[in-house]
Image (tube, rainbow, N blue to C red; front, top):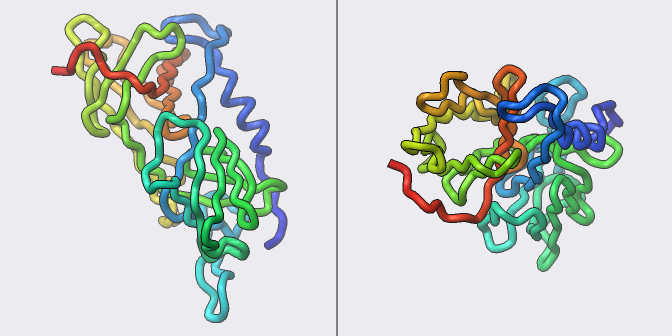
Length: 245
């Protein structure tokens, strides 16, 4: 596969960790960064072009050639949404990725290590880039908002609980206002995408400032914006003290 030029993952990671402004604060205020937990589970489609988006690489296996894929699964079958570091099994049609009994890889934050198959980092929960930038792969990340509690990390006062992916409540606020979430699901095999699962709308009932929108930071983080305001949420393994209405 020919080498391609992409933004460096380290630069992206640095940019992602520096968030200016806080919820209700002024521009220029540095706030904490949400921990990145990588997405595992399902087929990653290997890209065959330096053009934006995904053009599947059909160059794997004996003739006739098939799409190049890497399948990653958390050991045990279910990913721990609170663990930054976890082991995975993997296989696929990419060279070196065929299933080997007892072989395991590891996800450590943004870092992906699949011995003999793929080593690199996540760019988004949907996209991974190998060391050197020669291999890029896409995955249809489907979030699960329900487990745990989502905590605002600027000062830790706001907490949200979801029942499914479409809504829940801010249970630490007076009256426990409802929250409506509109997720824009990726569809990486479509020519027009989208190639990243994003948050189109995050609206708290009664919030005069209007809805937020933004991106997922791994499987258990959100970075939301509303004008110059930033709301950073991180999933934590807590049970809400009060149930949502």
